[in-house]
Image 1 (cartoon, one colour):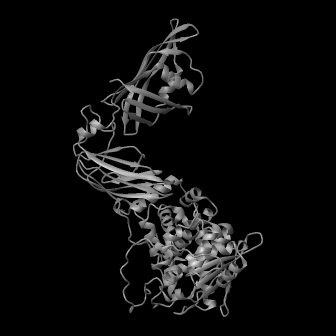
Image 2 (tube, rainbow, N blue to C red):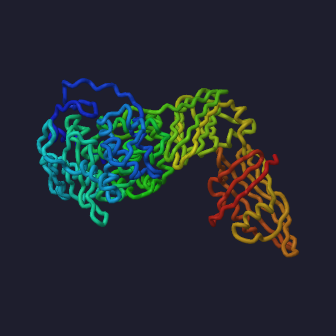
Image 3 (cartoon, one colour):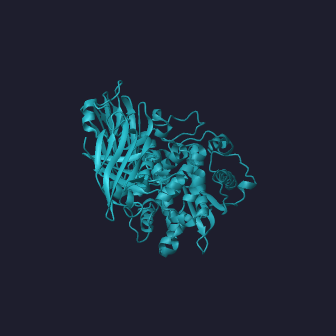
Length: 629
């Protein structure tokens, strides 16, 4: 559910014609304003610098919070400011205010004030507490639900009663969207020259609960674009929801959760504003970065979850207090590998391939990465990249003309591809997947095709591959185009006859159930025919307790395969055991036959074929054979 309709009531709350402002954008209803400067996308150095301060789960340590405060707010006794160029060079106080760097530091310190020296607390209080002449209004928890009336706006800083009505309206909107009724009052004020566009802190009970949420808004935001002002208000109010739901996580949770949620909530509430441009640029241009080093720029994760169908408004608060993997799974409503795949595809930004190959979100910019891989006959392409935790490798794939495309994605938790004519498909990590580009097909001399009896069809042109990680590691995408003859000579084929011993197969089958029924000698042969016929069987002598027996089995069916698995269908046949002239069924062979009820994963290394079947009872049986024909 969106709240872009809120923009329709902006005129009731802020007078049209606002100009200037920290975002650099003029008010939308200001006909005399100059056109905005062309947007140049680049990762924001301050966002990257502050992300380097976080711990492995994305939280801001208390000592780092004090150093950040001393850098972007004002000096602290006994605390050395940070020297990182991203925070100290080429940035202005207003840029720091825009990113809310002070807000992160103040919130962390305020939640842990009992661990701070008294002289540091005194400096903190000078920022958190109202100064002389500042009026702090109180918005009771149920005020929005009993009807908040929007007062007429002014082009100046709203007076206390109007500010209260504006915040109450936002509270009501967010309550309806999240399903969470705010239980704590909000104490709000405007502050000229505040070190952040907004600061939200809490009043805490002795037991660690929250008794009130305190919101300070920089007075100058109301002179900028109305969308940015409303986004800031909703951002800070969402912090109040976090404080109410989980005070501990609000004060010391991962910043990709605490600030990422609030940035998305503020922008989604108003439908996007110029204020989120640096956050979007940083998200879109650093796909390989760790999620746990993100803060405001995690807005992109919430945008992807929303576009994938997750009810983000309802999943955000339940994320609080969870570690990284459960939090991501909760946000998306999917396992983390699926979430990683969705985010990787979104980072590619080629909407012509499908909605899942584009990033979405309020205020999103046109920034995109350029990681190309070009595949031509005789000129394979490859790209490798180190991915951090929940990083992605989004690749734009350019396919030349030829017969067979061999595509491979390595690393990560999930990989996807979309080529001309294929739609979106999953790639098995580390496995070469063949695609036929030739109009006349890609048959090998033995009647098979490279990689098996099934090969996907694609065309030359532009496509994409995306690798999504959950844990840190190297990822790679490679593509190569061959002639049919080259591909057939290189690709391992199942076509042919494969052999192992009856003892090995019987031992594998029996190990799933217990003791082997007899000791047998003889070959076990499996044939994958070029005409798609399949046969398996044996003829063996068996011995048990001094008794000699003969045993035979014969099974026939049809087979299909791709590069990683095969399927046997229409399978018939049985096994028998003859003892002293009496023939009886061989149940273990019946179980083996019945285990071919679905796709069977296999690998071929040289002349060795290995596959695993699942018996009807759920037991796994490993079979290894050697090519003999």
